[in-house]
Image (cartoon, rainbow, N blue to C red; front, side, top):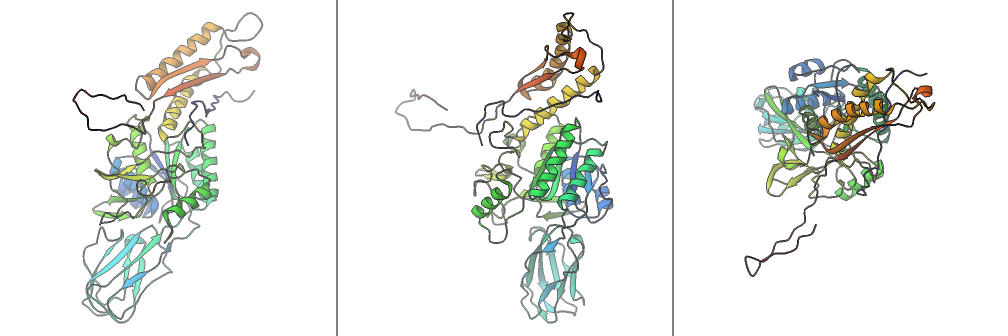
Length: 485
């Protein structure tokens, strides 16, 4: 006889759809310092920076803490995939030529710009400049170059820009992007394993770093292992951003081919407050979406759709440049990724800000689990069923006297009443679902096998995604028309 346990299998394809507690947010990412593979609950940005110094782990954690007031559970991984630099574009307005010191690896994903406010000769007093890590949206205070021949950006991991001999004009500037260090699939798996083994409470996971097929398999295996152990968890990760010159159509085709249509979040940009200054960095969408998801779960709102306008735009997120032109994916401008089941961002014509288009899940075509809220409500049902059934394990129960070994119907009815009351209070009474029913098998030979089957069936809420109507001029105020959906 095996260890007494509750086994739960979540069924899919039961709806007939044919359309394509107070827990914490776990984050798996690289960082500039801190312990490896050690989940460390954190509630203050200062503690996060003191422990992990900088990098994607700090950026994602600080956003969740400061924008949504969440507790985070950061897990730092090794970083076998080195960070790097994109093309350097410069127009210094003089004879000096800038170069990037490639021996210093960047620690985060940034859009560096440096603008010179007053010119002069490199190595001589008089040159002043401002730098930005977000493409110019948030400039630093003016700095004097002095007699230095290089600019060191401490917030970017001490990235160094060398200025060649010569002159720089008063309106000279340069820019380049950086990419953050990243884990490989094995390192990601080790980080997820650390979360599986920790006793710290968490329910949602953000994976920071571009997923490929191998990393996706590692993530999926980790989540399946947690579910098998009775820990129902959801994760949000992201795909790579478009390459330079890659069209939206080519980008969609490439992602669909790489993941065979199984979507990950497309990207946006997030502005976050780091202690006493604003730093806008080119960070991925999950940072905002998963933080809102975790905030909703903390407030007992598992059933909400992240796209519902009542909850407002995502705070500090940008998908357009300073002139209002798209510079990140906007599903209303370049549709297609949503149909491929990617969680994307969008704009609204008459509403300011950036919004979730649809909270898509990483589910196969035809799955009942179209949206994140369906998964969250099912997770809640699983958690309640497990919590109520575990005390029944190893309890003696009466059986029929006919030799069948089946449970006495009165005992079964009592257990069903207990479960249905608890599930009904948590799901139906709080409008997380339309109905929920727990049923215990009357056919299993409990006496000889020690096992009995059960099932929970949840009728979910429906989410209106399309409204069709007509508007017309009429000849009289009493004119009416038939309305059809």
